[in-house]
Structure formats: C-alpha cells, structure tokens
Image 1 (tube, rainbow, N blue to C red):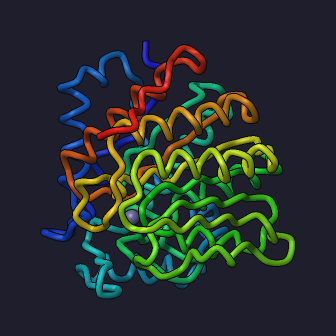
Image 2: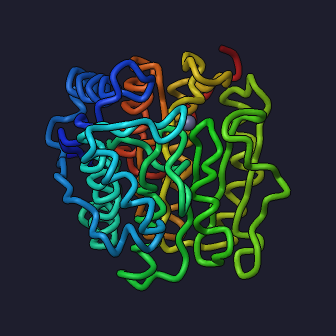
Image 3: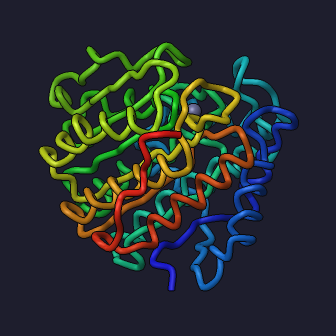
Length: 324
Ligand SMILES: [Zn+2]
C-alpha cells in the first residue's frame, strides 16, 4: 500500500500553452509512466479545489490575481516573454495553489504524511507582485503561509531543487523568520537571482539559503552540498513541516539547463528530505512539481521520487554510484 498520496486534476491540463516547453504533455507523460510502472495501483489521488482568495492574497498582491483573471477572461495573452495566460490558466493556477493547500491539510492530519502535488503551471518564480518564468501563482508559498496562518505552525521549511532559483518564493518570505527557503540552482541562469549573499532581511535574516552551482553539477555534487549545507541548516531551523519545490529541470536530459542529475540523484535527494521530515516534522512532507521540460526524463524522475517516498525511512541503502 503506497504511503504517499498524489494531488491531481485534469483542470491542470487546461493551462493551454501550445508548443511552449511548459505544456500539458508534461503531466500527461508523468501519469502515463506512473501507470505503466504500476505506481498508481492502490494509490490515493486527491482532487483539489480552487485556492481560497484570502489564502492567495496572503502571498500575492490582489492586482496580480486580478491581472491573471483578466487575461484569462480576455481570451489569453502573454504577461511577459516567457509567461502565457490561456483562457483556462486562471482556473489551472488557482487549482494548482489549491492542490498545495490540500496537501498541507492532508499531511498535517497524517492522512497520509507524504503528498506529491502533480500540478501546473509551476509557481516558484511568481513574486508577491508579478507572474513570470512560466509561473502565475506561487502555490508552494501559499501553502507555507497557509500552514502558518491556518494550522498555527511556527516554522516551515521549503527546499527548492528546481534548476532555477525560486526568486518568487524567496521574495515572498525574504523578511519572514518563519519560513526557511533553501535553494540549489544552476548559476548563472534565469532569473539571475539567488546569489549566496542573499540571505534574508530583518526577522528573515539567515532564513534564506542560496546555493548556486556551476553548470555540469552531477548527482555527487548535489548530494555533497545538500549534506554539507542544506541538511544542517534545516536541522538548525527545526521546521514543523517540510515542503519541496520539486523541479526536474536539473536532469541531464533537460533542454533548458546544463546540470547532470539522474533519476537516482533525484531519488537520493528525496530520501534526504524524507529523513529530515522524519527527524523534525513527524514525517510530514509535501512535494510540489515545478519545472522539468524533457517529458520522458521528467516522468522517470517523478517515478523515482515516488518510489523513494513510498519506502520507509531506514529500510534502504544508498544506491548512488560514483561513476556514470
Ligand atoms: Zn526550473
């Protein structure tokens, strides 16, 4: 019996971006692969609702929410050179954020303790005031804020292993000491933020951890820096809930970046966040899909993540090899 639930709705396919790299085929490929691999058998799949306006307005300027709604109702248009809104995009983005909230509710009720939200559009580039970088609403930020406001948590950690820096998530929590944001990302790369010197401000000082990595970083490089910097910082912060911006564009086959992670590398990262969640969060762990633009590599990597999530902590050996 799978110990990890999914969140999914076909409404996510309604964000119609045509031949854009961030397109509906990504989720279709993931679900088809999970099905072929038997990973949907006996697995719970939650159907989300749209995010409540107040939960979205807690992390976004209402003018941004209005802008996306207006663009969708007007029949669709580009918000910037990368970011398209189609007629179904407002609804898809609202359900994507709603899916992240539902996952938080589920894990905080231990029903079950691990949830992977297979949503799109992605969210981590969306700042408080601006949709950008394929992202409309920042679902993981809304989920973290919701865990604080609605569930009364004091500390939430977000680990972001998407190949791009999650400037939006950083922006939203930059002055908050209640959300630790830790990102591993390729440097230099879009969006150009995420320097080491960006560590937070005011009460948020020290609650942002940026780890820029050179192009070509492989499984070993990621795992080494995760163990040396990310894990100790998360342990020191002692979050009550762990959220992951799970992007797969650091895969070696991905067309948008130059990293060299493999499926097994993503599985190892998953084991590590699962271990941290077991130590501090009673195992409560939510992953939210961000990027990943090679549909087959994305699907295989999500499957590897899910297998690692399903395995109980402590019952496995590291399988990362040093040679590839
Ligand atoms: Zn990305």
